[in-house]
Amino acid sequence: MNISPSKSPLRAALLALSLSLVATSAWAQFTDDGGSVIHRSRKHKTTEASEKEAPAKFPAATRKSPGLTATAAGGKALNAIFALEQAKNYPEAIQQAEAFAATAKNAYEQSFAYQLAGVAASESGDNDKAIAMFKQALETNGLANDEHYQVMYNLALAQYQTKHPADALATLNRMLTETKSEEPQYLDLKAVLLGQLDRPLEAAAIYEKQMAKNPTDAKALINAAASYQQAGDAAKANALLAQARDKQMLTDANQYRALYVAYINSDKPKEAVAVIDEGLAKGVLKPSQDLANAYSVLAQNAYAGGDSQTAIDMYKRAAAAGTDGEAALNLARVYFNEGRMADARQAAQQALAKGVANQAEARKLAGSK
Image (tube, rainbow, N blue to C red; front, side, top):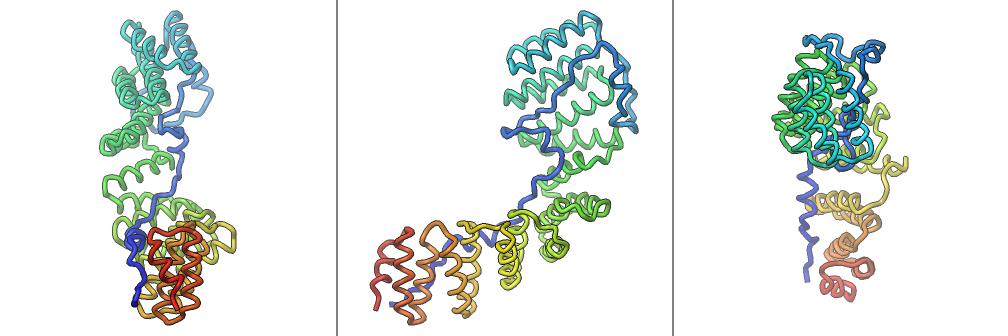
């Protein structure tokens, strides 16, 4: 019988992968594991002295800070709502904040209350409510610039988390235009949003600018490569990833994976294997099913190109790294086609021991003579 290596969907799936954006930037610091905005307001102060003591976060802002504060009674009420939010009594905090805002004495009290309601809503996982409250905080326009623009940023984050990237980008662009800020955390979020809106070259330009400012910024370099690959410019993506490797800037498994997948996608198997070997030698990469899948792609490509020995070598690696026996079964198929019956039997037995979907074929190969 003539058994050929399985044309597994794994090959097509891996080759179709594009690089994932590396989780960078300070925008992530405002989100918890559930994705809610968690930047919290400070407790209300009856004066703005504390803000005046600290350097302004947005010194170039075009908006004139209103210079408002709360009345004595309003400040007491706001601090009580703040305490509810801090105690994670979110429904009560939201209810009291909205009720207070409806009768507040000035715009500052209203904006601060809506800000508290937005944070509480986000903490409770209700980002739609958070969006509504953050919008109200901005519309009442009573906060000092630092808080006003933090609310605007939180609104952009909430819109991003509710999968409204166009709205999030519009909000963020307004913030950046009004503040003239070039802080990396804001630009990182903008780049992510541009990528989601299928504008990867604009995202890449942001990362390239960050790299120009800080040539050792590995995350910006990796993300630039991911953006270029999204744009279909594999050559530029691969060049950046190779540059990161040459500079010893690859420090985690995702970065090594980005580079070896890029080489596989570009039909550069020797380079891919060299990257994998380096990652394993450094202990950054570990044997896994994902790594086994990569080896299997290399094996299948080699076999399709008539290089049976490389296919055997890669399937051996895949069989050792994988959690199932599928790679070992493909190894048995190659051995069988090459007339190496004893090796085919041994590989098929390994496949059966680890578990395969096609038990009948594995048993047949295990008994081949």
